[in-house]
Length: 305
Image 1 (cartoon, rainbow, N blue to C red):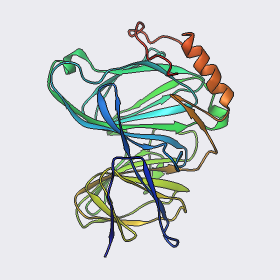
Image 2 (image 1 turned 90 degrees about the vertical axis):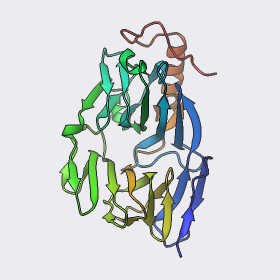
Image 3 (image 1 turned 120 degrees about the vertical axis):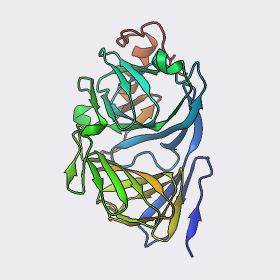
C-alpha cells in the first residue's frame, strides 16, 4: 500500500528511508505578495536550493473582481535571474531597462538581474476593469559567480517558441534546458532544467536525468517510488537517478533542477555568493541609488528592516 504525503500549508520537510532517491517532500507556507496569495515552497528550513534554483512560489489560483488586483511596486534584485510563468491570467512587467511586457500564459520571461535591476509587476488598466483570474509560478535562478555582476537583461520567449511534445498521454513542454531530445531557446548560464507536463490519469512518464531536481505537483496526484505526491507538494531527488512517475489522476507537474552552484546568501530580493554584495545592495536601495523604472518612477517597496 502506498504512503500518501499531504501538503500541510506549513513550512515542512520530510526525510525518506534509505534506498529511495526521493530525499525530501517540501510543502509550502502561505504568503501574500501584491494582493495574490502565494505558496512558497523554498527556500525553507532544510532546503535552500535545488540545482541552481533558489526560490519557488506558486501564485494563486486567485479570482479578482473588477478593480485592483496584482500590484507589486518597483523593487530591486541582484545576483539572480527571475523566471515568470503563467498558467492563467496576465501581468504587466516593467523594469529599469525600459522593458514593458505583458506576460501571458505559456510565455517564459527571464529577467537577469546581474549587478542590479528594478522591476514592477502590475496589471494593464483594461485587465483591471474586468473580472479575471491569475495562476502561475515565480522562480529565481542563482547566477554563477562569474555572472553575478553581469549587465542586467530581459528575455521574453513566447509560448509558440517553447518545445512541445506529446508522448502517449503526456503533454510536455521543455521550458528551460534540454530534455527528451529537444532544447528550449531560453538563455541559460549553467546546466538548468525546467519543464512542465500534463499527465493523463494512469499514464507514466520517465523523468529526465539531472544532478538534482524537484518535482512539484500543481494539480492532481503523482505516484513516485511507492509514494503519492499530492497537489502543492514537491518531491526532491538528489541522486540524479531518472525516476518513473505515474499520474493517480489527471495531473500537472513542474520539474526544476540542474547542476548545483554552491552556497548562496539570500536577503530579501538579493542573492549573492558574497554577503558584501548584499550589504552594498541594501545600502543602495535605501539611498535610492538604483535606476528607476520608466513609467513607474514614483512608487517603490521600502527596504525591510
